[in-house]
Image (cartoon, rainbow, N blue to C red):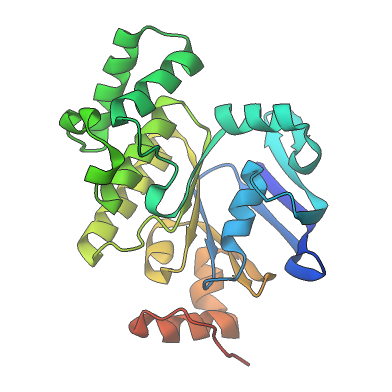
Length: 266
């Protein structure tokens, strides 16, 4: 892989004596959709929190995560807190499960317009126009702007968060199980939309998912985690189809049950 966006080098996360991520090494390219795959508890979300700098203080880390921004490299682990927050605000947006990042006490309009004005230094009218155009692209009705997050379905919350990322001109969007709770049709529509965002806006997408079919259809590269360890990484076709690890085969077997419980594999 060329044009590397993130590099995980001997990255380990511990909680006391318990190892949560064990000596992780893989690279995320600058283009397309990269998926992180694994069952619940495999360490997928810890990878996302590590990138955005949201690991709790009681966890310790070793190794580093390198972010390549054009000709400049940043070691995210050793960035000062102020610089890390600035990086998170300008470079990337994390969309957690159920889009809990939305403030339940603020209207959708305030959560969109105010950050855009501050971030892009534009007028409220200009911000409104930007939101209107993005809503059209995402097939969202502007009527929801005056509502609150509680009135939105899970899929709608994800789309609103995507609109924030596009309006803020985020270079990287990290989506944590965006299709969770959606039926097959809505899941397919959302994944197509995510693909369009990646291709038309040139946004780097990191997709955390246990949905192997969605990953196989939309992602280009992936990393598979099990019990905090890296099982495999590379092109999706190679990892999931041509040369699947025994754990990947076990994940496929679990899919019809919609289980993703702790799996045993040889």
